[in-house]
Image (cartoon, rainbow, N blue to C red; front, side, top):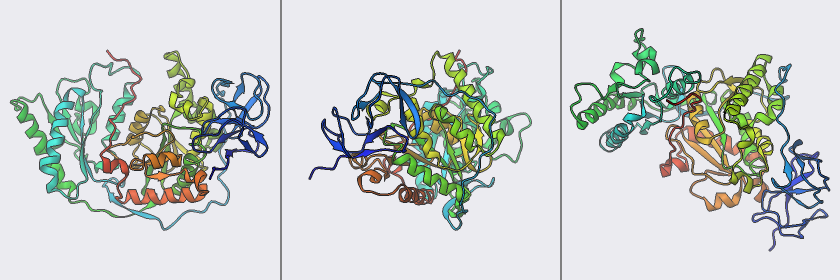
Length: 516
């Protein structure tokens, strides 16, 4: 039986629709009296009315570009015949948002988490080992494998031991403007709720990023004795007591064993949903991401916020063209001004590299129907839901307060995930249209497919199929509720596909400073 032709229009003001059919539509296919002038792939755009050169192209009710040539009704619209509009001006005066009407707090939802001394809650019980410089990465990696093999089986209540591996610490202009971003990122990742404040530190000894600089409250001249990090958690490889490789490994293993004893005493306990800190991200996006996975995730984000939790959305270049929307949703004029400041900072940063936000889109984005960054941004910003923006997190900083927060990160999947870890997320939700095996060792990552074809083909990599909104008639609301339930289950210990397969991407620090 031939599948009926399906075109999806988001907003009544739109003059384009996207093809919903797996495999796309052939030339001559008809939908509601519209005949396709050429074959159009799935998720790609079709003109609903004739367009003259220079006419605006509207999707999501927004102008995503201008026709570069005359396009007939039923014609294929993509990057070859659409011109990107100029970037929105970053201007005020910003005004405080009006809260959505008829929003009731969501009470009675909880998960089983690990309560920390500082009040934060982990969703996993992990021993993390951070380094102060890449030079020690090989040693730490070897030690982690030994710990997993020789020590971890004796501590059944510890989920994992991981290396917070990175490429920073020396060979950099460590006092240059911007250098504080990677330093505070590493500092705050070490305090992620999933590590219970027990992060170990391995130093070489001669690096620029000394332990006293990375953790001044633990290793500095005025170190606070109450800090959970301390001399007992530090191993310095150039210490004269280390006679050869095995002595270094033995020191790391002895320190790890002391930390594991403490971690193994922890148990999951009932925690309200207000203790959730959920990071949202999309990667390998297509034009259906903004139709299925992202709007459903926006509904889930609203539920987390209504339950008193924290939701972090990010990616400066993927909200830059929707900044007017965010300013209108800012909970105060001060937050609106900070949103604009972060956009301006990033514009300057990109200009130093002689580029702008248009460099964001990838070949895969375009093959998936996204013509330019404006269209991509409109579909990306939807995952933030509808609640007021309650705060802005500068790159590398830890989240303050709850509600919906914007973390000013690059759009790179790996850098964004790293910065959300520093912000304190304890669950990550990642939507994808083209597909990516992305995963993190530090927090569970729930992977959501925007298309049922992808969810079926990558059945053991995707945790949820948001494509059912198109393929099976499921509503965005019901899919959002399912995502909320999934977040609670994963926060309580249910393992994700990436966890079962052991998929974990390396940390990727954002370093806008020079390398020497």
